[in-house]
Image (tube, rainbow, N blue to C red; front, side):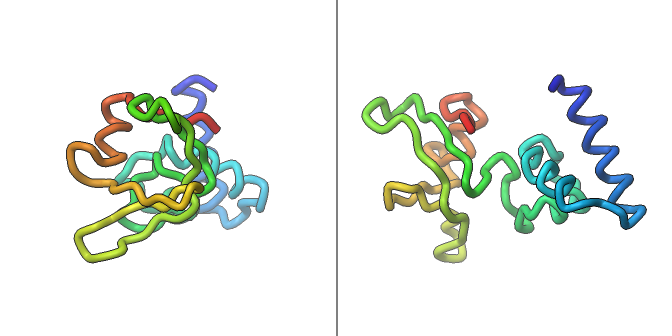
Length: 119
């Protein structure tokens, strides 16, 4: 889908939410489009199951490629939590934790294009 098509689909799903007739299939579709929802769009983020304050590009169950780690380039996010008040992190399928904040955090790497969602 193009960016314009995604935006149009998100607005169509918003219409279904507001009309109180969104289906389970449409909720699943919205969850799959979560990374395209604007960070301030609380209505769609809530319906997509993105916890408040979390970056919608980081999706539990999604796989990512990290160009900065050629030995383990692909990982899957299995949980997203604040282990401490100032330490938001994600748990990976290899048992490791990945910090979200800071210059080497996952969000900075997503912004720089070093990390990309693959599935």
